Amino acid sequence: MRAHEAGALHGDIGNRGPAWLRTPVDVNALVPQLWPRHVARGPAGALTVAGLDVRDVAAEFGTAAYVLDEDDLRGRCREFRAAFPDADVYYAGKAFLCRAVVRMIAEEGLFLDVCTGGELATALSAGMPPERIGFHGNNKSVAELTRAVDTGVGRIIVDSFTEIDRLTALARERGVRPRVLLRVTVGVEAHTHEFIATAHEDQKFGFSLAGGAAATAAFRILDEDVLELRGLHSHIGSQIFDASGFEVSARRVLALQAQIRDARGVELPELDLGGGFGIAYTTQDDPASPHELAKRLRKIVDGECAAENLAVPHLSVEPGRAIVGPAVFTLYEVGTVKDVDGLRTYVSVDGGMSDNIRTALYDASYSATLANRASSTVPMLARVVGKHCESGDIVVKDEFLPADVQPGDLLAVPGTGAYCRSMASNYNHVPRPPVVAVRDGHARVIVRRETEDDLLALDVG
Ligand code: LLP
Image 1: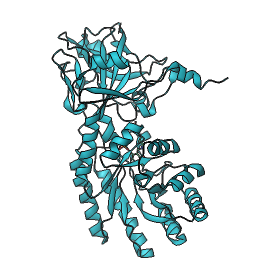
Image 2 (image 1 turned 30 degrees about the horizontal axis):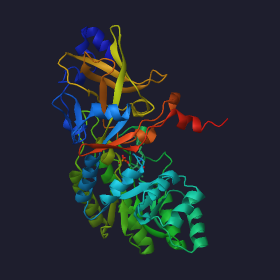
Image 3 (image 1 turned 90 degrees about the horizontal axis):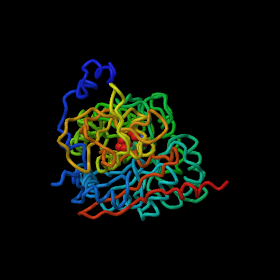
Image 4 (image 1 turned 120 degrees about the horizontal axis):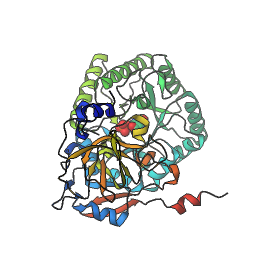
């Protein structure tokens, strides 16, 4: 049954939607796991972030805006570091990257995973030490590889035979010995949206384990002895809650490690298990803490190494979403409120699929709350939509909002730190929102708002 059919059956606005939505919640309450740690509802009823009233944020920086709770992000970096004390934690920059965030994660002792020349340029321009950078990507160009080699990037995760050839040629030409990991496709069906699963056989990343390409690639690198093969790498997908995928992946990749040892007498010193750790977007999600994750991964790796009689390699992980995702919310202003007779109420905000494509692309679920005030009116089941010319331009599919939501109100959508600004577009020539970092009651723009002049500057015809 679709949400509007349920509503029609029950006949009152509070009863629309799937079963889990039929118990109206306290619309003023904030579910802690969905929000950055320093967000609260202040005495005046408005949200505050690190002590700053979001009405002041909106007045100073405009809406839509991504608001980053800087201490929340730093705290998550520290938790990963503490949970993985003898492993390297690479922040996956694809989740969200700008110079200020590069500096934050570097100050917190993390490494950085980049996957394009643009991300690499951002990291280097922020002063990230190149040896702390890992370079990913299934189609790195010669120019990108050259830059990585010349700047001394710490490791390159090779993804194809073509890339091995390119990198080998470059290394010979320059007389250097780049450190590489081999991206292995372990054949795991991760329980996540198909677009963000990356270790099943039929997709573009890595060398297949089952087909033998991974072993062939490892032998080629070892036999040519131009690149320094440091270890194997596996990333099974994103927004994953179930540790069993990591277990299968570690088992298979370590079996390859043992095969390489048996064939060439080499035990590769490193192992990267990728990222993909899920976060809570709604109350339905129950993510593991970095500490629990680390414990499980350690146990899996130790067990598999013992079974294969291997020394435990130096581990690394690559969380992106779990570090930046929960640290950000998007602040919007409501423009129109439309009750579509008997179906549902549409609350339109001043952004949409251009600043958060995830709902449209992955059918992702988000939540929203009235941010500029509390309300004591009855909740209504609403759909939060954007301003784009598509009916699929949905930010939050179903949410209880106070029935008195009106134009000019502010709405906040939590969990938008990962893959929202980084996947933002200029669809309908809507300039992309700024990223405002707040710490100790003080706000600063770390990515400024795009302007119409910025858009027109590219339009040189
Ligand atoms: N390492 C590798 C090799 C990756 O490909 C990724 C993500 C990560 C680490 C970080 O994964 P995370 O911890 O952030 O889940 N746009 C999609 C997600 C694509 C993820 C791509 N690779 C989304 O919005 O859900």
